[in-house]
Image (cartoon, rainbow, N blue to C red; front, side):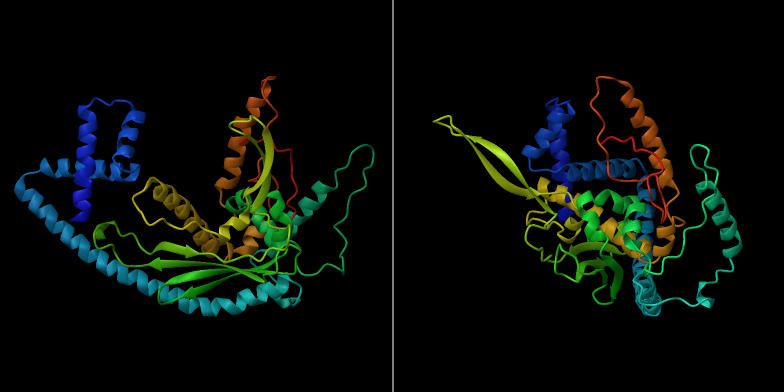
Length: 394
């Protein structure tokens, strides 16, 4: 009932705004904010109003049958929630089976284990891969001038340990992670040795573990991000249930070495004295863009109806998507993201479209030079180098 009453209050506010002929979107938004109503609540009220009008247009006997269908839908949702609970239990069961494979992967990546010849056979892939490698070597042999000597395959280096920059390359290749990783993050990400997932059965959820080797930035060996999930329909809106939902997350404290915290930066700001007119320069620390802000998620304020709460909820939603993606894709398909085989098909498409659009703006001589944007890289896969100069704007 509380939700219906709130929706009614919002609708009445909207109607009041219409009666006052507040046609401009900005004026309507200002009116709603003065009334303590968020945009999400306004949209929800409008949706409820539209649904109510659609129901009102039906004959009473048809409306009654629609209510009967809603009851059936509620029964379906109750069964569906049990289905997803059992799916999570299965995930926990099979996570124990995956664990030895991921542990061996970490040993290979970090040079603690050398796979045998038998373990390196990929019968479904080997024949095509040899042809692709031959073409790649031939393409790399093209040189400038009259030097026509072909470059051979790189010599085997006995000093190479494991697979260098394995996770760093994945961060560069995956657009979601690449956009989060700043230049000052890169030396730290290069120290990343493994990412693990620990599943929780009751209450349901999972924890991401980022294991780091020794580095000059912090003393932690493991950074964690814990996600809590719910698999039950909301009591007030049960028909909106669409499966397990992450509802909260908790990061961890990073023990930064002195002067090495990449999540803060120092800025200088001029202050003018009100009466004397003198100006002084002060320094203050502010948050800097960094992947490692991922381990300090925002917390919801006590007033869940405030505009600030709405903004934080949007940040948390994006955070949940990242955590889910790391768990579902990055950890389980790491080698395919390293080689580029498992990247989303639209990654390159997005890059090409942006490049075409944004490079065209540079034709104007009056425009300022376009800043380099961190994000999708032209070079995909372990080679990873920039295949062409970037031409991207914010």
